[in-house]
Length: 131
Image (cartoon, rainbow, N blue to C red; front, side, top):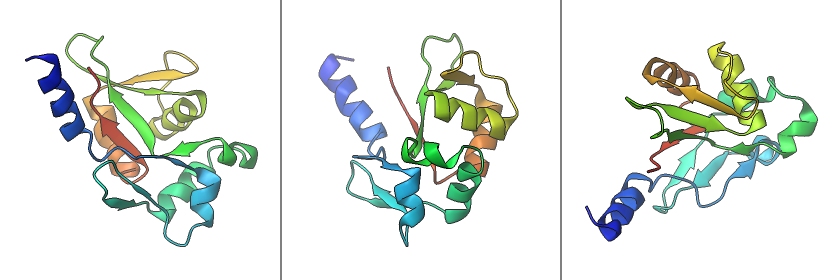
């Protein structure tokens, strides 16, 4: 597959990724928390998920955490995996999955973890593909 085709494929696969992410503080203030994907579709976030996340970090951090949390493919791991990056993001996902992260600011996830996470936080996490 040439580079142009790969880029086109990734854009198609990642069309749901936000154009811009809002902070947790901003989302909690919104009547209908949402973001707009690169595809122009408005994706709504469940308030229960936002409240769950807000309970896992202190109120000062609400202004630093941008949502949805990105979960990227981890092509460096043989057999496939996903990863979450960022200190706050890693701390939140670690607490939800009750799984110790490999690093303070990065955590590898395997299929069972991804399934559990997407069941608990389906609207405040986004899975995307990265080569």
